[in-house]
Length: 456
Image 1 (cartoon, one colour):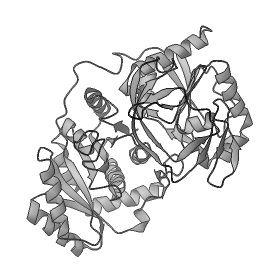
Image 2: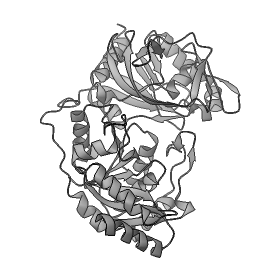
Image 3: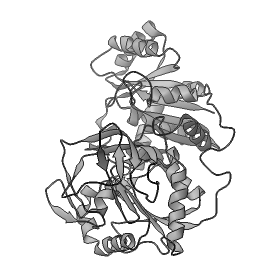
Image 4: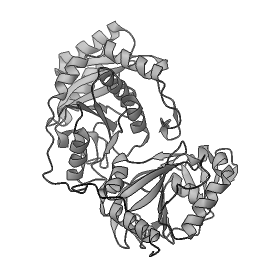
């Protein structure tokens, strides 16, 4: 099971560009590439998917039990030639400063996968040897198989850096990307711009892949990828033995404003009996025919608030469905859309669906970021009262004109209450991975079926 992990020494060293380039280069060779992203990120996987033509999967050892991570990894690799895992933050950064929990290193160790460490070489040379020596010695059980350098100034610069690294550590330098502004990917307030909004052109991907082919030792990377030995799951623990027949239709908001979903979570819903019907709150005038449930994921509604406001018929359709008792689940951007209004970057107030008693505004200094453990305070479409689940929060917006939440109690914050439960609607800033508690998929589908039958 060929796999390689692309890890960064820190955030911002160029690991996404290098990971996407390597994926595109391998796909260009005719290989079936399965992309993965370590951690809870939604944006980087959209670029992986664009480069390979295959849905990228998230591997998160904090959100998911270890066996679930291995199962999802093995399942996704079936029929693929190679898996490429892009790391999160720095190699050893995760949920704890004292352990590898939730880090790229933990995933690499769990899967027995070799690691390529990405370093920014601008303005340095011999010091790179010290950095690699430190990373290699920090966790000797980890297979640090090689180094890829970013922002190399010339071939001579790479040659000197390669000597400094290999001469002091024995870890091979397997290639580089030069300083090229045309290969940098656009960013904004939550990181890279998602591919759903501004997909990389084929010309850009071809240039990036060609650069990787020219300045990376692809054959050696492929040979290293052979040395992967993940554990195996004897029986499915997340997915049913066989996909169940469709029992309910769940409409999924998918467009430029709403694109943050874990693909494995959607696959779990489908496997447990949901027919998934994508729709656009930006462009469609009504929910898909036969909708029995609604899932509004995260994204950037603040950037498209004018168009969301202008689509009055869709806002009315969502409000009518929620008021009729249809099961509705909304995360982060979905919560903002279900509120009364959104105040955008320019301070303009835009009306939203009005399902929940809150409004939101963009407030740059108030970044909310981190893992969360939440306990349901009421019965809802996904959880029963008292059930606990792990999630993740990442947003700049804040709520205003709100009476306070009633959906979740957040662990470690005293009596901190978050989210809204209104009839059969659950809206929260916390993103959940359905694989962390597969019963959520079954409960959501059951509630949607009961609504369809008039029994909810």
